[in-house]
Image 1: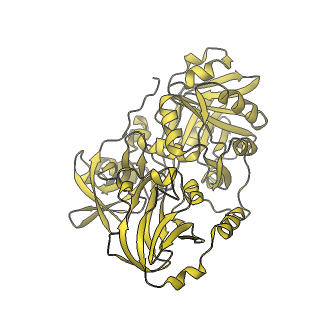
Image 2: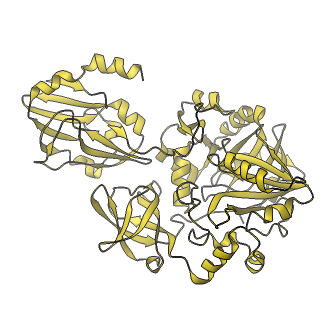
Image 3: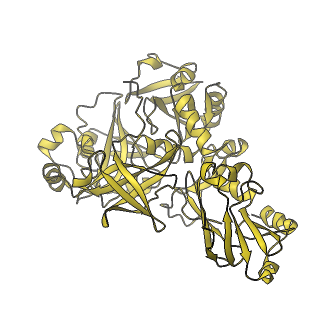
Length: 379
Length: 123
């Protein structure tokens, strides 16, 4: 028996994986640790399906401290970032979050990220596997007057699920109540005596929060939150199955530097004013694609049977190869295999019958609107 | 009846010239929740060391290698409806397929329980 494809193999780290602030805490709780993005990360505790379903019905605590937390500050920060991202940051209010993309000159996606306006600058959360490249890219392109800080002394936790608010509300206090945060809003809170930046956001499709805290407080906060009856620690395995059900793309798989935002179905990440003005990397190509439509586009596929379609599998229409699977797995909520794929544009409509080739077998598949499982954000 | 183990975490119970093949409890614990098992068809020839079955877990697909060469006589049909049997009962009810051995001499390269347990303890 051999494990044919692990969860991620994007990282290239010569020195071997490093421990994150909660390493010992995960091990004490029986987590199975795997290498991910250059770190030891918990892939599961009791089992992916149980953890997945727990998050959908209660609340799960995820350690996402491998992600890059960056602060871009200085008078010119807004304009300098707008030269690298297609977001309209000028309209972003203090404490508000926006999903955006770091773009290459040819319009390819270098990373996807969240930007939040902090007093004096922008707080960015970028992917763990790409953070060093992102930092290098930002250092190269940001003018000298703009300061880039890597907040690597902070841990990042995500508390996700319909009961996340109830659990977190018992411990967070601030200038205003935690209930004042709606989806894609954040603020500073006192969380069990530590200085926390909490935003109402996440990667599961559920209501929930992302919590940035000093690394030295991570264990105490994780312990405190998991002592709440609603909360259990959840591994990376369920994080992946949850985001797949939520139709959220994963960088390095569904998004790469060879994929542009329009093909990726991320047109919403290109703010209206930026569509009119351009001025971001690859603007000409991207705005052209927006007008003409891309050749291929990202869709959801619901598969017949129990065999999962995996990344790299060919998508067929009749005998014609019409696309490729970029993420696939078993959906614990729907109890069937689901996938995301890029397919020829004319085949993107809901209900189109396609097939996926897996290990010489032909699996029937149907184009399904994303998300597979409805988002339950607190707007 | 004797039970043998491979370094790839398959087990095989041999009775006469028929072997019953499954994956070990250690293997299922490493794979996590199993959602689908692709089984070989009766009559299919398998070669020692080649992939004979695929176990799908939530996160990955894993090959199961034939511990011996032979021809498949039967697959465990219960796994079609209940693939999670491989998790809950890997070394008994979660067997995968039966094979008629070509050459029982191939068994001599496999481990017994004590040797396998020692091997896993080192991993």
